[in-house]
Length: 246
Image (cartoon, rainbow, N blue to C red; front, side, top):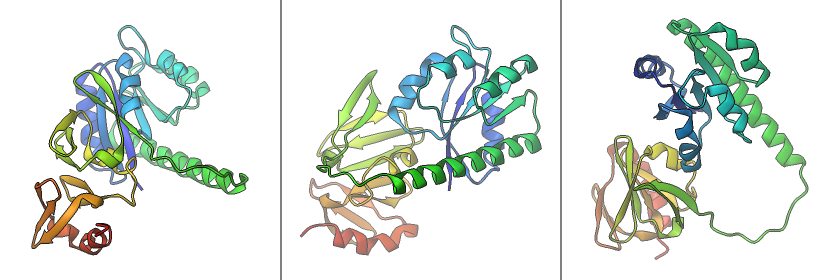
């Protein structure tokens, strides 16, 4: 289990500290950074986030006022240099309140508390789904939004050939062209249909239906593109062959 995290703070040094601490917490993954609360809604529209590290005093819109605008909130850990916001923060059901400057041991305690809260949320969701009456629905492929070139673009996953990681960006390829979006490859894994898309390399996720053949460590697609098969992903060959539909 990994918590997908977003850092929201107007101080670059605060980002650096949290990123450094996060590297030593195995169940945390950095999925993005914002320097203004106003940037966060667009970011959340583009990908799912489990936990936000949120500063309070930021330009134009402070963290707590921003938090009140969210209808569906991820878990939140407040990171502030001012202790007077603590009571108001806990009234908004935050996981923890880290008073700057904080040490790693205090950060780890907050991280473990967030993981515990996340687990409880997941269990409650599972129980609620199990208790809900069955519904008859028509299966419709869920489309996804990505942000590219200042636009929110709606894509049908069935049209995506593969995704290629470029650090904090991802190229989303159709047959011949790509859209560049400021996201991580891992953020797409939970959003794309698991029966169609499979990770074949640390830098690639591909659509199984477009696989033409596999030769050694090379995967050839129906549009002529060739992708590497990572040495730690050899076990996916059988899944690829079963998923070609040929």
